[in-house]
Image 1 (cartoon, rainbow, N blue to C red):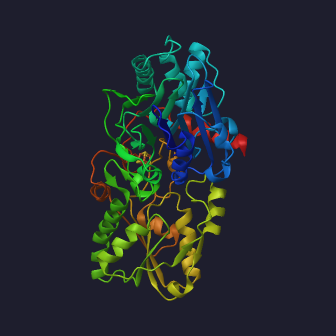
Image 2: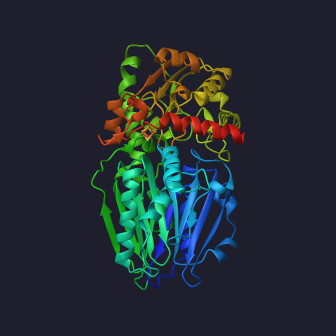
Image 3: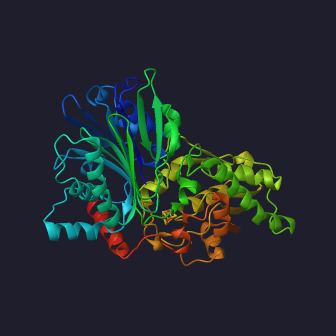
Length: 493
Ligand code: SF4
């Protein structure tokens, strides 16, 4: 999972440098990836791409002087969360390619058939890949489509050639990708995989002279912060191209269906964002209401008697509020989060996750001692966080802990960019709810079911493969994908 941004200032738009708007948008997408950050801009006067990228948080990677070099009317940015590839600088995004056309791209997602495509393109065409990032495959397929385009193409010529490249990607790349790209002298483009697994939105801003600036980005929070007005979501299987004059063209791949990742609402996206016209905050309130429906009978018949509702900070706070309101229970914060420590789930090794967790939460003893706690978490992935938190609550005198999870059990791996591709890593895989409770040390665990989640999001067009094993793409290469990922991580550790 990553954050992507693409900006183009059309005609003589002068309100803000494209690269600086990109930077501000990335600051608001930091929750989508904390491993590394990068920005590329195209300077039309010098006819050159300029890139700056490095490991670390966006605010650490970029200094004011970087923007003196990141000039031009168009720019791309990326916040990285590594699920394929290494932690090395060579795998950072955006990536620029010079032949047959100058092009830069950045993406959010994961190609399930990455390794087969690498082998095929190498064997059949002798192509050497220089990184272990699946973005390089997408660039390669797009560049194949651009073969034969003239050196100074017209806007319609750019779009026609991009469409050829996009069709190659849609037909050959399996998995998830929400990507942004820059074509030297052509303009800005964006694409979303045929299932629309990862979010991607378009926004627009107009300066006093009437010139426009467009931004594609992963979430609406970045549009709001940078003053762009939301225009629409990029559709699943759609290519959108905006040229330097601000003309927008779109191509729709026919074999598309909507299968949005439910985890964006449950955990990943910012509460302030709206995805597919559904507010993330409102969905999380709905999840709390759904949990209340499940818990009310247990409270009425005396099976559980919580003194209050307590969230595992931060994502589950919203569902906890509506759950508490709905059940007429007090809402208390028994755990306080140190805001300077990164999100533990998206760190890419178990050791890093456990270390982050130890530093992250501190107990409020006055609210814990002698209390029956209804603890709410957004999801239970590996169980690491919940187990440690429940130990912490019990160590500080909690009488008992009921764990309510605002998501169904995650029993199957995700191959689309959330870092749990192997089902063996998942706490709920092969365990009953009672066994899960025993493992995490809770007196009881309550989950939402699949239908509750659909109702809370108010959609039947969801990917819920990690819940129901119903994958929206062919997953023949999944085992290969997991093995190669593990080999690479071993090499690097
Ligand atoms: S498998 Fe789960 S986490 Fe992965 S894209 Fe589908 S819903 Fe999202």
